[in-house]
Length: 445
Ligand SMILES: Cc1cc2nc3c(=O)[nH]c(=O)nc-3n(C[C@H](O)[C@H](O)[C@H](O)COP(=O)(O)OP(=O)(O)OC[C@H]3O[C@@H](n4cnc5c(N)ncnc54)[C@H](O)[C@@H]3O)c2cc1C
Image (cartoon, rainbow, N blue to C red):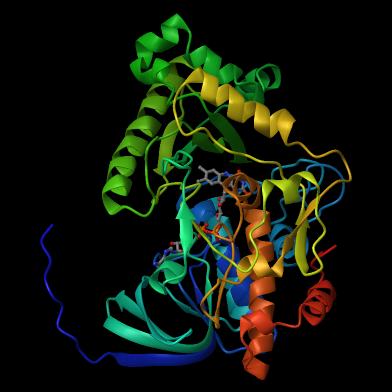
């Protein structure tokens, strides 16, 4: 491998903030709103030109339920978002739809009202540290390469980019480094809802019957890749008349922190979506006049870096439904670990884990300790969302959007409290944090 030395240069410090939220997905949205509403001068930096992360950028078409059984366990800011969008409360295993454009606009409005400053089209590429503190992040955008200073930082990049750049230890994948597969979701319009709904009633996607149709001999003729295993997974959600979102297929062996892998996944994902629509037009009831509207502008990534935090949530914690003294959120979403290889055996194992092995009984839930958000070795950084400190299997439960918003909400509040006191996140008064989260309608016990 060849190397070249980059000459050092002075960077303009383009702004100073109390709290700087890195990444505007579900976690970043929760974090920025919570920090700004609690009086912190807050900036949110996002590489795309809109908020929502996987939901709007990768076109993941539904929020996971706010509770698998009973009334919502995830409340606070996530409940507010669902109410604003008028898409139900996510109780009792209901999956609220994410119409991408409506949702992006709703997030803009929430930020504007809360007074969060937004910096879009800006990628964070470095950090400047003094000892155990981050002084600035380094950003790249049309204005050039700049530095942004803050007292406290929250890593909501999903990939723990800021933690990794700061030298925080992390793990990635299983013992072989394999991670859950990627998916490139897409939207389709022109569907005859009645016809499609009728077949869905008898062929529930969770029972995989639609994919079974695709694996029939005739299906294989139209869609030759169908037997490869990449087409095994299919979930669909209606946004409005004739307009649906699809979470379809798997793209294996992709590392979401590797640009070359992401480039391969983008091409495969587009191919998959186009093949699907060509196939569905011929084979699925209600698809005669259907057409592809959009493929996610970024790849749906389920798993990359998981930080090493002050506490690592384990499968044992999940199984014993541990209630932590510093719990900042509770949830009952089960372990949803998509298989790392294409074999039918691996698929069945992961499907069984989700639908049987790790299912909680009604009324049961686990909790998330604040310490899982606190990376070891940096004093003024928290991680929220998909990369909080936990076992891989636990991450397969905590990675869904409602809990990402909730961990973001807790991180934003903790950062606003720290901005007033000047403390390290390790010294957060978690009793006060829990009280104040409860006061802003989040559920912590
Ligand atoms: C295919 C698929 C299906 C899923 N299905 C569901 C589902 O049905 N329901 C559900 O609730 N969850 C689902 N999930 C999980 C969920 O979507 C994600 O785990 C969740 O969005 C993670 O939230 P986050 O805020 O941690 O990260 P993300 O949503 O990934 O957001 C991170 C944000 O940070 C930005 N960013 C990243 N790096 C940088 C950088 N260096 N500089 C600037 N900005 C940066 C990104 O552009 C993005 O906007 C699914 C995930 C996938 C991939």
